[in-house]
Image 1 (tube, rainbow, N blue to C red):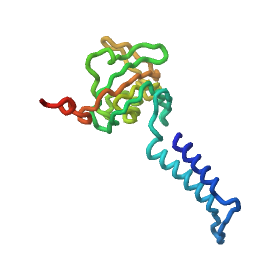
Image 2: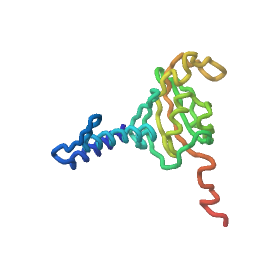
Image 3: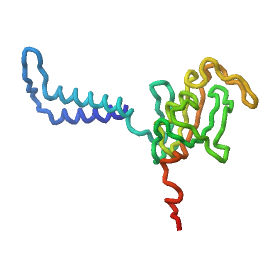
Image 4: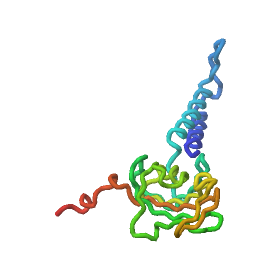
Length: 193
């Protein structure tokens, strides 16, 4: 959305330099002014950029809604690398049922992060969709609709875990704390003296 807005502003700026009289060339089949051509090119380019790259990076305090319906708020922006599909990522997270606040899990309270392979299906669908958008150091709060969480079956109760109702929306706070293999090794940072 931000890319489209920026390029539309560029298209308006191009119009400022267009001649005041429209100079068109006509044929029996096609009649396009330079101004119309440039406007179409900029708007088409904006759509292509937005489709290809998914817009510009998000910033702390910003709330974004994905096409699938997951809404996320950027609590903290990191500056590390982005994970790629198939890579191992170290994350910390806290999950709860949005409607009643029931805690599902809290990895922020543990000494070790949770390791997951990006895109492997090891987490709920809504989280799997958003993790590849994040960078190391990012901390986001996700609001995952029920159909992208535990779905129509919910989650049955088990030892130490409460039942999650069908199609319950989930609030999922997640932070990517590392990408083993993409980060500089500690020995490289401190030296081997």
